[in-house]
Image (cartoon, rainbow, N blue to C red; front, side):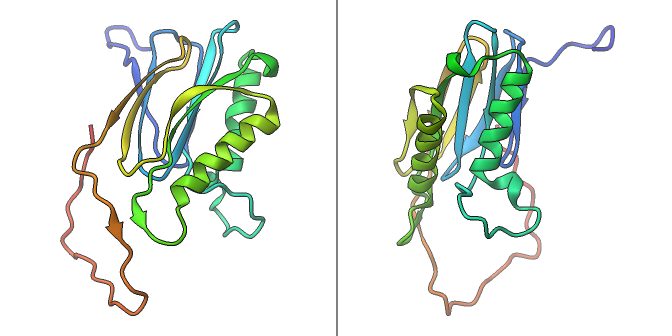
Length: 182
């Protein structure tokens, strides 16, 4: 921190990222649709963190550079980051958020993401203490990693989108603007 600058107490993570901290004033935010965020902490060590993943990643057939989107990769990075920061595996507790069904199709990726995350926690012996997964709406999550406090806001205006037929032409706007979500 540079003298005279106000320290930011909020960190926003996006798909493929994770963050670990021991700062009790810090809040981590993310916005989820079918993605899942695991919020894990060790209450005695005073450290916690969050990840944000798109795909479970249980298949060994992934494209080069895709690992950062995969749940198995990000769950391992988060747990290892917590352990390096002083957490102990047997004291870890987790909350899961996201996994909405945002696209109507035969494959509910949100459900698969949430099931993967729950299975990972169970297999690793990490206590699952709550959260909110499923449904049809995206979520904005605010998580204070040290205290374990979490706040969820459902995104209004979220609609279920039907996947276009495979034969439908794809239209891409050439003058698309930027969208910033708060």
